[in-house]
Length: 165
Image 1 (cartoon, rainbow, N blue to C red):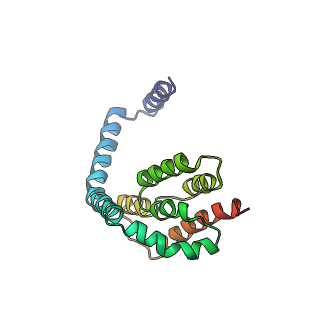
Image 2 (image 1 turned 45 degrees about the horizontal axis):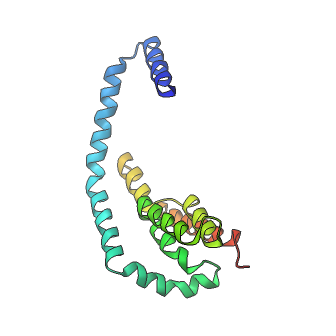
Image 3 (image 1 turned 90 degrees about the horizontal axis):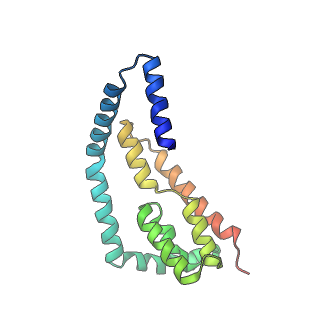
């Protein structure tokens, strides 16, 4: 219902402004398809790399390697796969969150930390690739490090919100 009202409102505003609404719609759809075609190779490469990363055991190895460091910072080992996957893939991170919540429960310390990690961080590489690539912006050397720093801050904040009892 709300979508119908919104569409009617857009048509009415377009008619009042004497905008060719259908032509504007087609132009926007064309631009959307061009953007999708422009970023598709990068998305396919990223999805393949994530799959290789998970299937090869690199995720488990990296988790084992980083667990002692993050344990000192209060981040449970069980949340590290989610923390490491979140900047790469939202859907993979969501699957890891689901598994974590099923195994430990949503009200457990691990479940709470994982939930805050998921909600306070972003798929950094995907977002930077899509928005910078779609806008045709030349990649700034400051955007990715700042985005990764915000991901780390959000992930660490989760552990500080629910300290070890």
